[in-house]
Image (spheres, helix red, strand yellow):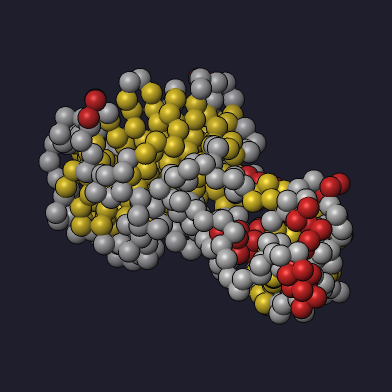
Length: 440
């Protein structure tokens, strides 16, 4: 599956710049359309964006781009019926006309099918206030992958406006749940981040839990509870090849890859206690990182692989701890003030935050904090929220929520945009967000 990326040179803008100058509108060389406060500052006003039609052969590229940007909470697509003009991919928009519509960004492009079965999308992104092109690229691939082209276009727009990489060309692994509440059929499933291209990777004969992507997003590690003891599996998503990582006595919990993909860290139960263990995937050698009578589980590596965050009840209640990757220097980072209990910690790809589940006052909430435990901030709170996972850009967190009927997937940003439900075929739990599949 190959993609071609080519940058498009800006078209001539002298006339447009002169027109803006006549209106007294400055055209600085650089300016930031939207600055993100990742520490949850004041509410963000979405950027108004006009997306010209980029369709061809029944492929609604512009519709997918519009949906991606709208669901990010940072963009407000303009109704095409209100467009002041139709902008082509090789000409500048009429900047003053778009300003009367309060448009901040205009996206124009075209879809070009090729005789060899490939497809190319060419587009430009225009900053209306500055009167300049801020992005111009073209992507090409096999026509069957046209939805990915749309997600790559959305990534480019997102980065050109915010300065941050997008997370639209990604996949979500999760557990699809169907059937009566007391007889749920649970299947390992993967889909695009917008709910498209759903693929079931297991039949639901065995209980499966906690899927986690490898750093390349081509493999999943997960738990399977069949007739034998619980086992940790590795599954190649593309080929369907599956192998047992280990068949350990007792219970095994929450396997997760190291950042380099060479190890899996997990929790192994024995004699009523659970310890964090790490396995080398080449040698299958296993080593314990924690010990004692406590339940230590839910380990997650820092992005550089130097540290591991995990949960433990060694202090009497579930709290979050951090240690070096070799098990040394174990430190508690949550206080448990007000009876709060913390679980399922996951390190952000940006290194700056840790997402977690908090139980307090009868509520289950999803929050984030700095690795030293400071700056705790809740993204959502309610009846039952659990199992956070990070987008690869570290700007969004996804989790599952069960209000009593069945679990569903939700996501929210770390800068205060409204939470969004993630479309799934049915009930869904245990989400895992892949790395981005395209360059940013």
